Image (cartoon, rainbow, N blue to C red; front, side, top):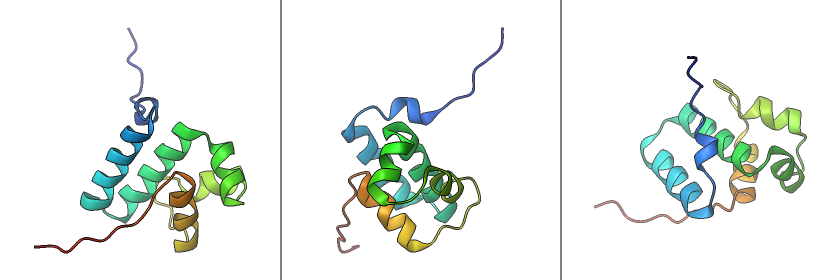
Length: 93
């Protein structure tokens, strides 16, 4: 029996799960993990939909959100906004 590869995008099936996942990675992850998480979310929502909302091409998105990519900050902001992300800073105690 062959095991299938785990794909977190399959579990990001509602807005609450997407937000929980992104918040966790933004708090705990490094730059590579954040880029990868955005890629997972974009895949879950639909790369075509994200491409349309960001004004970027699908190939550009796949490249920018691939493993070990170093996307421009502008690209990260566009993707975060397209997936419904809002930034709120809170004081650390």
